[in-house]
Image (cartoon, rainbow, N blue to C red; front, side):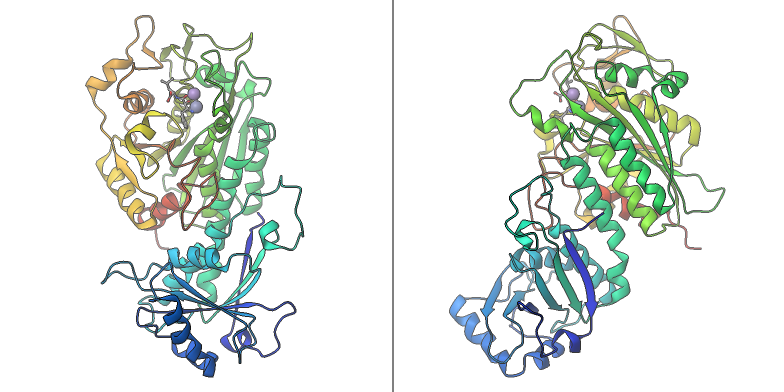
Length: 505
Ligand code: BES
Ligand code: MN
Ligand code: ZN
């Protein structure tokens, strides 16, 4: 993974060395709501500290988080530019949000490609290591750019045009900063997979990218079409049968826990392009359906993150990779297929394909690995956008404890989930006249009937389904993300694993 932002650490003395790097650099410092500086920043600025209240007055700067003072060519400093960032929380009594502050730092740096950041505050953070790692993660997350297909890069080394931004943090815990790089790389990986176009990212090439996790010690197994046929994955294979690109299932295994500990399992929908199939989608906006593999991207990014930080857990990541295309060989509405579980499915709408893919992957994971729980992620329904918009992912679960933990991890990570109902009355809506079940449930409660469908392929295993159609792609941009592919879920699930499933040795 190449990051758009490279992070290093240096001492405060180095950061203030009188000989500036060629081309100059930006010095970043922080002030609170009283415009007070940390001790290191104050002594570093010396007489130049007097610039701050004057500039603040002129700019009505009150030290609020999200606001900044830009002082060019500050007299008495080696830096070419002094960037003063406010840290005062929006509401009184709130704690400083260092993650957001990291994102805002990159935003305010703008086109600067070289910066030295004095991680120093008037009132020191309660937990310095946590503050430094949150801050560094914010820098990395906001620093991501997907510009590999922009050929008109004026200057390769211009940060606006793709060159990496070189950030050095002074006065922060180097180990804490190093500790987040794997997670940031995992988020970046997920974002890039979602952003890549479908002529380049298709089931086989996606599987090749997943295979690269072997470098981190992940075991990667790729099931090709004959292997899936042997397992009886007719629900998944039916979706891919209209495509020139053969389907794949990839199983990634990270064995960081004790030998006999049950694995936790993450399952992702990887529809590399969803045209709808014979039940073709309307043309407008169809290009967005390259992102219909965001669930699989998240699972892959998560496995990257867990392996990078050598998480003390046994984790399975399983992704179902297909392309849903109309063709003479494509599946038809009216077809009946038998899933690996033996359940027969009547296809009503070939555009309700994600649930067909997940049915076989969920069943296989449950059967082969007997996991402690399964969490699937899928850009499953447009209806979840109607219900929750882009703020929350829909959470469906057969297990209150798992749902509670996901909700908690969501609040802490900022990748929020909202629990939706399941129940027998909804389940009835997918009974079929001709087979055991059908793949759509009518006009109402579309996200719920989709989840009910998945639940038909889960036995007693604790299970949660996250419908990420609103959060995983075409993301709303914000302080931490400007990318179309958001990488949503990697931080949520990394957090879940860290907080609840890693046994200290
Ligand atoms: N991939 C789509 C869902 C989707 C919609 C994802 C918008 C992201 C943004 C899914 O395969 C789909 O087509 N779902 C149908 C289901 C319907 C046919 C029952 C939908 O939501 O309309
Ligand atoms: Mn579809
Ligand atoms: Zn889809």
